[in-house]
Amino acid sequence: MPKRPKVRCVQCGSLERTRVAALHIAEFAPATGSNILHFAPERGLSALLQTIGGASYRAVDIDPSRYPGLGVEPFDLCRDVFALSPGTHDLIVHNHVLEHIECNYSAVLIRLAKALKPGGRMMFSMPILPGSFTDELMNGTIADKQAKFGDMIHVRRFGVDFLQQTIGMIFTIADRYDLPARFGEAALIEANIPEHHWHGYTGASIFNVSQADLRV
Image 1 (cartoon, one colour):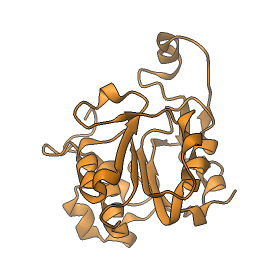
Image 2: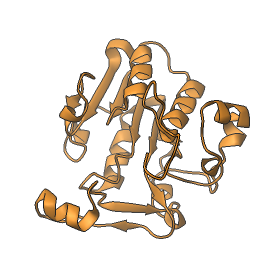
Image 3: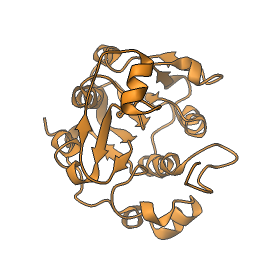
């Protein structure tokens, strides 16, 4: 990856955040046949979750053509999230999705959390950058949006200084993120998680929440 040498697995294609998510999934240990909803499915993580969920695993994205061969169904988080039945999912996973959705991300997170069963978990990540938070939506062509937000069209920027005032207003989250305290250094080294992701929130940090963590 540009400016990030030796972070992508040559076998499964995983990145740091994908492997941290896998550590959380292994810790959660969802039962075989669990009802799993996976947004923007990473190839390696999709294979893992499909092994667990079987026919109850569902991979979705707003543009399924980006994931050939994974059986991805169309799903628009700004529209289709309201059709999810409450209390129906054991596990919901989405990594680096929130920065792209062109609607109220808080409402999306709340609706996803309410779709969890009691004891179910939602695991997610997004780019977390130094400094401030910004959130801006605009009308226009894709070219207009790329000119405004960059080629990846990140319509919001999650700044580390404002996580408690953004994600932390929706879910109870720790003031400080500490991976070694949860998984141990040996597991992080084996999973090739660079040390700068071990302490403090970064784009590889996984928020692991349940309905009980909702503050609204």
